[in-house]
Amino acid sequence: MDHLRATVYLDFNQRYQIDWLKSFIDRFFQQHQPRSFAGRRVLLKPNLISSRGPRLACSDWRVIRAAAEWFIDQGAQVLVGDSPAFGTSRSVLRNQRIMEHLHDLHLRVIQCKTPIQKTLSQGRKITVCQEALDCDLFVNLPRVKAHSQMYMSLAVKNVFGIVCGMRKALAHMQNGPDHELFGALMLDLVALLPPAIGIIDGIEGMHRTGPLTGELIQLGFVGASDNQLALDSMTHQLLRLDPVRSPVIKAARARALAGAFPEQLDYPWGTVQDFSPPPFVAPDFLQPVPFNPFRFAAGSIKRALGRRHHQA
Image (cartoon, rainbow, N blue to C red; front, side, top):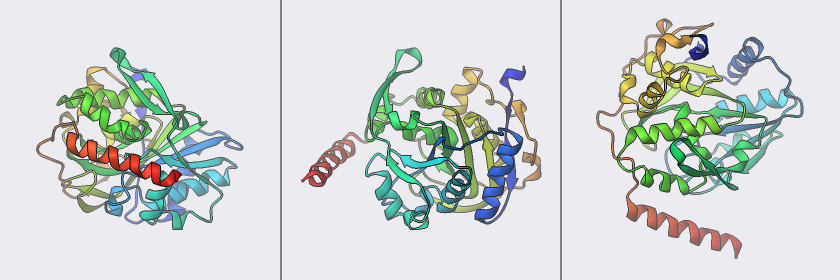
């Protein structure tokens, strides 16, 4: 059925080139979603997982800069923000040396921190960041990474960043060992978003382990869509990965969501058959979803002390 179809714009480049990335974004909007962004609030949501991990764990600065430049050129009010479990958007951008590549741009770095409770499917409640919802366009900027608990960290998983701060750890703990239930939670979060697109960075990825530490793998692709799930499905197909191993895709197929199956995807540009990927290694065994409770408690104390020190 047509309502289950999704379009993915796929192109290939072995190097990070800001002009090429801006051209990719421009072609996407010209063909798929032509519109005016003058005066519109556009939130760029990179993966800012940690200040302390390797830079590969976070979105690449060139992808963030290319997106920021393009939207600024269109007259948009550009915001860059996330809700890291520990630290702030600005501290991660600074410590990962991303901010030094953005400081000359007319944008605003925000901390997604204002809590608002939402009710998800099956009556589950979760606290997300109001800032992530108060924009005219949400631009998801994930990097292709393996994930020790969720098999892969792609577009849908990156939306988990809208959960407020350390409430992410609570969400992990409340979902127990059920990976598919946690995958369904991710899909519910995507459904909360305002108008949104995803631009997935597969130029350099992280494989074998993840999402914080893993090995660099040179891949050489970028994808864009207004369907976050379709980007996940495309990436599994492109990298010859088993989608059934993904709790997100399993949950999406159980719900019969658009973009959950490869045959539902349309490719106006490059296709998955145009790409010969290097061997991407995803985890053989998925670790339990909950965080270690002792680590969670220690992290909560550290976060509270950090707030007190900042206020002093």
